[in-house]
Structures are given as structure tokens and as C-alpha cells.
Length: 331
Image (spheres, rainbow, N blue to C red):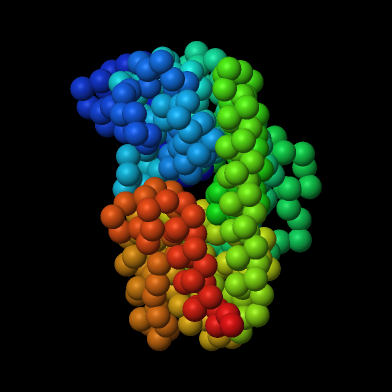
């Protein structure tokens, strides 16, 4: 999704074997590399996809992630070894438009089952800098298929936001689609995949209810973040995200944008500037200091590290809810 990044060709991939990121990191208890086990081998692009695969696949899958814990997923460069392991896997689960090199590697691979999470729910367009509400949303179109067929790095038209996992409802829709894909690809274990999917969707629905209830009675609905990762979450719960850096987590804001955010904070009673654990907090802390605001973490759950406020998706999302409740003056 980041326009400053380049695609790398198959020839380039083959040339970087010695310089690659190394083997895939197993996310399941079975640490064998993809394609070398007697289980259903799934390569996932990054943590939110790996988490789905683990929860739905259970004991029947061996899940490996292309993105290392603590690595900013937007910056991932696929190694030749990872590309080779991808070829040996039974399925690839990814979110097209978030990681261009992953999109290219999976597109060029011969993996039989390719699951693009972006086609399993609807992607909305959020303003590149404000990240808030817009009158027109891409979710009016069917299943977000409008992201196909564009040659530039940011695959989604009009700033479409790929961070669907931060909306529990959309994440549940993705989970249902992944479950059906697993059932079709590995029919011997279809009953377990169906059961596990239903359990996961139930937990995501419960999380949605916690957010709905927890943010219903609040003093303000505006929050400031490092980059526009929380547009889907904001849309779901009637909030307005004001992002310092737009959809690109590492772009620098203009002076005019910083001034605008200071004015917004004062007008809307914003108390907190949120930053994330995988991206530099320098700009967020400078803005907060200049405007007399607090800082806190709002985690886009792109990876779990020792700095995460929880051990898995659900724990970190509940920590996010608590942070939002404090910042927004929710009762």
C-alpha cells in the first residue's frame, strides 16, 4: 500500500538467497517449515492472517508467517528462501494491497489455494490524512473487488484502507471466508474447520459488543493516531480518526497538517496522541508536547512482541479499547 516501495522481480528474488530474511517463523506449536509437514501447510503474510489460520486450522495446520515478530509489515521484502518455501505450501493467506512484495510473490507462485482477505469483506476509503468519516465508501461495492488489476504499489483505489482486522465485524467476515477456503482445500478436516470458525466468529462478535458498549457514552469521538490504521474501527463505532501521517506509517506530516491537528485537538477536546509500538513515536510525542496532550499506545496489531499489551489479538484489542475509553472520556 506504500507508494514509495518498489516491486521486485522474480529474477531479483532468486538473486538474494544469501541476503534474505531467513526462514519463515512458525506461528504454531509445530515449528517445521512450510511444505515439509504432514499437516495442511499455510503461509500467512503477517500476524492477523497467521492468527486466523491458527484459530481456524487448530491441530490440523502448520502455520508460518512471512513477517517476523516486531517487523513493520509494510516494509517486508521477501527473501528467495521464503519464496521457495511458499512454493511448497498448501495455501497462502494474505491481504492484497498491504505488502506489495508479498502480493507479487504469491501471484507468481504455484500455491494451489490462494486466499486474499481483501476479497472476503468490504474495504472502505478513508481520507488520506484525516482518516475520518467520508460520505462515500467503497463498501457499497461487492466484497472490495475493485482493488484488482492496478500496477502501482498501493493496490486499493482512492486510499482504500486494508486494515480490516481492526474492525472485529470485518475480521469475522474474513474469518468465515478463510474457514470456507480451508474446508474446500482440506475436506478431510472440514468439520473441525467449520466448528473452529464458528467459535472464532463468536469471540469476535463478543469483542464487537465490548467496543460498542464501552465507547457508547463518551465525552469526545475524535482521536489522533500516528498513521491511518484505525479508519475501519472508527467507522464501526462512530468515531473520527485524525491521522498524522495518512496511510503510510512512516511519511512525515506537513507543517500545515501539524497545525491543523493542534487546532482539531483544541476544538474537539482531544486529550491524547496515540502512537504504535512498531513505528517511531517521535512525531506523535512532538505533536503532543507542543499541544499539551498526553501520549499512549493504540496498537494496530500488525505483530505481537514483548512490547505488546497482550499475548494475542484479543488481548491487544481489549487493551486498545481501554486506551480509547480513557482518551475519549468514555464512562
